[in-house]
Image (cartoon, rainbow, N blue to C red; front, top):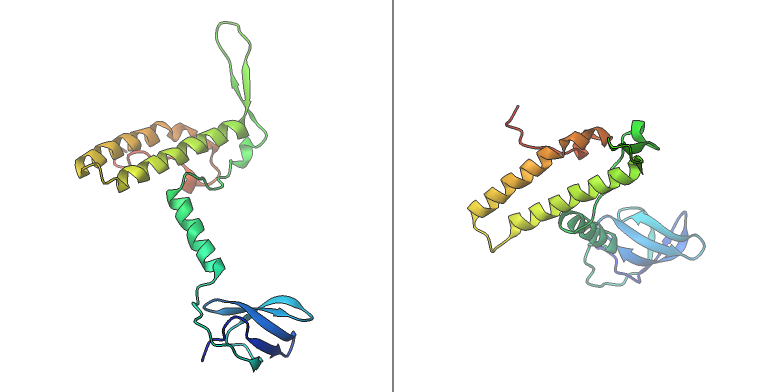
Length: 175
């Protein structure tokens, strides 16, 4: 089966006449005169009115965007959506000094967001250490042990996380 190039014209039994505007490994994006933009499987049935042969790379913009998003999540200073446990939604953190001064109240959502930002920044630091070309392996191991201890110090906040997979994990070998 030969893949049609962008600009090829087709006629589809359900959508009518259209022009191929994008191609991926499995789909054509076709702009139909009467139905607008539709995605159809490459192996679906349609008549070819005019086939343009072009060097179509079967990687679409969507595929590139998806890959780039994954790379940025892994290596960038961005954080993913992390859910607060339902029981804490709308709650507040109250800091009460023992000297009779006024309490400080912080919405749990705000506090949780800050904890997640700390976690994400530690992860980025960890990735940068592991990919560093300026440190030898022993230095990387030493710093990784400090990071593991930091995670362990933050496990008290795990009660705030809805999903266990988002929680802090310290040294697993210690009980």
